[in-house]
Image (cartoon, rainbow, N blue to C red; front, side):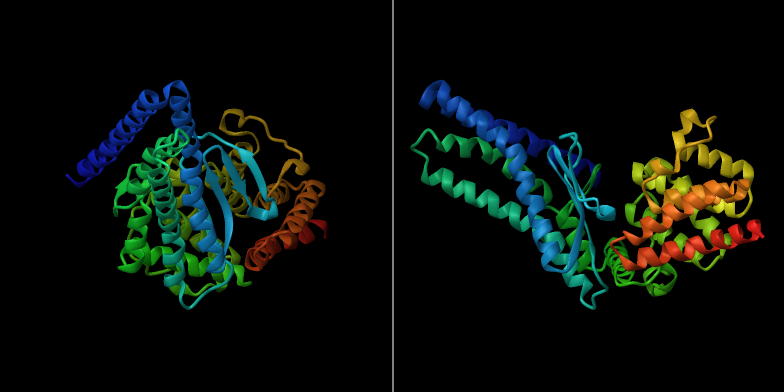
Length: 373
């Protein structure tokens, strides 16, 4: 029943948005002819960019003010990726969900307050944008140019009101829902704060195995298809692998693999890297071959088995390749891949992630030395 009500609310908002724009276009045309109509259309198109722009800007501004590092954002047809120091802006599908991802640059005692501010930033900026164009449209109502604002109003209101209730749509939770979960210590909110604290400790220099166990274990139960659940499994995997507890590491990475339909492309690739690495370390040639082939070419080209080391771009990819080549006894390729992994680790923004890569590379260095002896 609740899901039905949420869907009805979203559909009603969309219909009101369309109706509002139609009314604005009607009055623009009857009052100022085709020029008024074009101005109204221009306002509607511009709002498709500027409404989410101000919403995501709110998240970004509050994230930076609270000591968070903005990893990525997606606004309309633009996407920013600041992971691994790349800082790349590119074009993307305007139909994908707008979002901002930020992580704390250190562990904070008041993480709950900071996370709440970061979450509320989008609502505050979105509301301010809506209020500004509403007041401006009212003041300039007698001029043709005002219909740029009237044309922008429906979508700006739609986006703000869509995020205002504490709902969970098919595409995810609203900002207000996340904010309520944080402030009321709901399972999702507790998990979110734990994940942020874990990220903060990694950012400040701790490898995953040194993270406070309270941030990884005995956490409230949430759905396994939640991104936070997957993130916790990755962190737990890294912690176990760093300590060479490969049985526990296998449990966590296999659990992630079972959730493959719910993973992003990046998460699927990260899981493949770790499956290749772990199976190669455990000398499971059959599984290592499958994972390495899938990692290199994709499942449809799994019969192929080679890829140049230079084509690999992340620490995990190079480390996985090094582990595979060590298992196969290809010392030259293993040394190249391991050297590339070390160079990638030196470029990691967060010291803890670099420390983790060094720990994960140690078994490979030891096996290389054994093979050379």
